[in-house]
Image 1 (tube, rainbow, N blue to C red):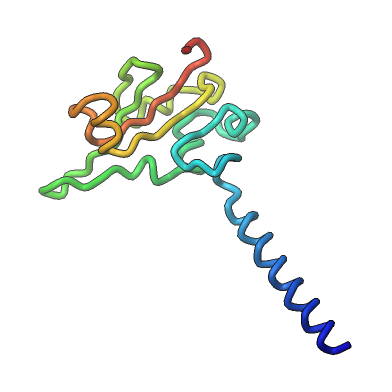
Image 2 (cartoon, rainbow, N blue to C red):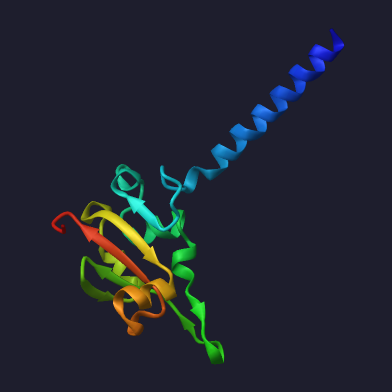
Length: 130
């Protein structure tokens, strides 16, 4: 009987540990992809613009990289295929303007959009894009 209790106790501890790991990941997208924010994740979120949402849920996207000489290079913002500028452009975009937001790491951004985008890109896909 004591052995059965010990096995049951270990099982409960293991289950509690697994459920805690799932709960701690609450800031990730439903699919667990840290590079994409889906429309479902945006819907009903308590933020007025995309900058505030990203700052709360994907802060790493906003940090940028340090270049030689200590200069910080931050990602550029694009909406569909149009360049909007730096990170402040996200402050002008309400959550409802996006159906998806995707972060491109510097190397991926340079390969996808060209070498002039080597600081990374945050691309917002709007309601009207295909």
